Image 1 (spheres, rainbow, N blue to C red):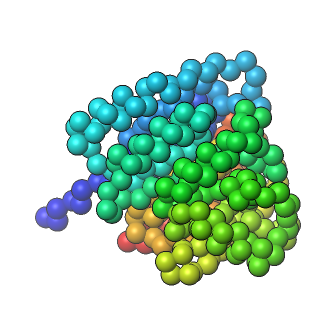
Image 2: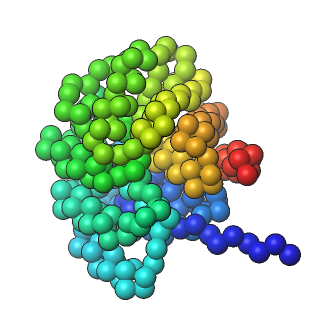
Length: 287
């Protein structure tokens, strides 16, 4: 009888919304379904996410981050990856940076999704200085997954709307890597109105890859978290960066398509649950 391999373990540092699929309510089930243990460090608890809802409750958990980290360290818990998403303040940026320093090993990876902007605009809760703090956090990461608005903010330059040219995208990728992370996944890339996807860059090999799928009209909440969770799951299952991005694009776009077909309120998040079998089939092919 073959001995089962030890589970890999991820520390997911995100907020959690009781309703509306995003952040931890997306990361935990997707990463777990991929056969990876997922430990969670909530940065805040909300009744719903903030996209399209009003009157939501919000409880900040900044004061809990350091005690949780210290307890985990006292137990000598180790992580194969650390995955961060929405962080609500400069203080949380600093605390998560310290978490990286505490739990970094010689062979684990740190993935930062620098959630702070979209569609050419910084989220209203952030000041322009927040992007400077996020840049510092990204300098500690192995992989970052900004969208094009976030990329512009990290580079301190104006946002440029698409369609894009390859020379522009590839210049962005390389300049983002100069911040510190060796691997970049840039989302929201498109060269025409028919297809949308991601571009990847591995500074160690110089490899640039693209992953596209047919564009589904509309804006759907939580798709960045769905994409990031699938991407990390594929990487930890042995896929290259470019292959992992292709897996994540297929998974995310399929979930969006199912949501559109079902007529689900777009504020509620995408129907990723019905798409998990497709993700697992993709991951199985990589074994």
